[in-house]
Length: 465
Image (cartoon, rainbow, N blue to C red; front, side, top):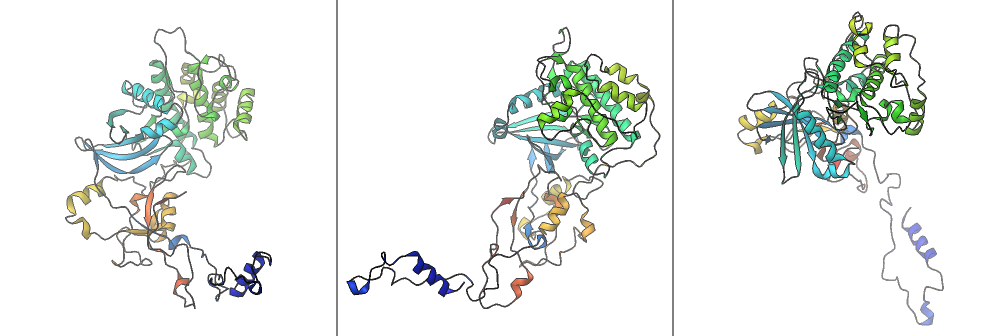
């Protein structure tokens, strides 16, 4: 695609009627313009855009700056959901690890019933105190930034993350039994306070460092009047796969306590088999299958667990097990033998011990005299993806205090800092600045320098999809 081809294209674009003839007294319009030429017209074999491997895209780690919200020292990101981010914090008075949920009011306004759900959760959690229910410790509001900070008990992970980290997507029966018993203890307390959770599922069941299960996310919960005749509810909310048949059929009113029993039965089915009792290509097919109430239990599930699942997943809410019947069931009383290994909580960005992430910020604040003297830290896109997937950095030969040999900068050999990575979930995002990219092909000599989309020193801030 040289200059001759470009000139031919221009001639074809204008017909003889549109171009004035010199003999008729006219002059050509484009005589003073040079013919168009293509980039890299001499090196036709060299493409304009180059493929860049993930280990050639370099990010500059965000500098650790100690930040305090009230009396709490901020740490790294633990996770991110539809409502906001969750970060680790340290109480500067009691030196206890906490978790803070950061909510933006502008974001809540874009979510249907977002502000109402948050206010409902705050109101309920303030009056709840139980071992198996997440505790709300403090609420801070920043009117200038329109942010709200909910300081809660610190948890290292949830049952959903643990299930996804195993190939079978399930727990050993003895481990599932322990979690289920704690779930029933917390659910009994909520029902004693006339509160219906409406969204019991593995994703809302968290674990502390000591293995205590915490029921969380009371955003769609409903508090009944203590003087109400029964537990009748009129609005159904929650995850579709855990909804009972009465909600799937569109009933105007239903028994609230039995909704939690059904979703707990689906949760027990999921953590013991790795499957869901009801599935569908879309929400309409899913609700259609739930409304029929027909499901199968794998043959490997034996009695009395099979009988318990049948009792909790009864299509008729009246015949469905009550909380008292579940607690008196033989499978609830007898713990299965410990035959298989325990499924651990997945490591957070390669840290299996879940060490405190606030300490590096405190070290930088108290022991670094001149922040400008600290050399910038770099890491590659390949390493970023590995940390996001929860893989151990040492698997790739990474060392926190060792220089990265394959990365060069004017300041010297920078070190790697994986602390600014997000927790491995599809909803987690971090904004970083990118540095200059280098490749082996750039070292080759060519007649003309190739044009590349990454031939700049700095990328503008972008979000990884």
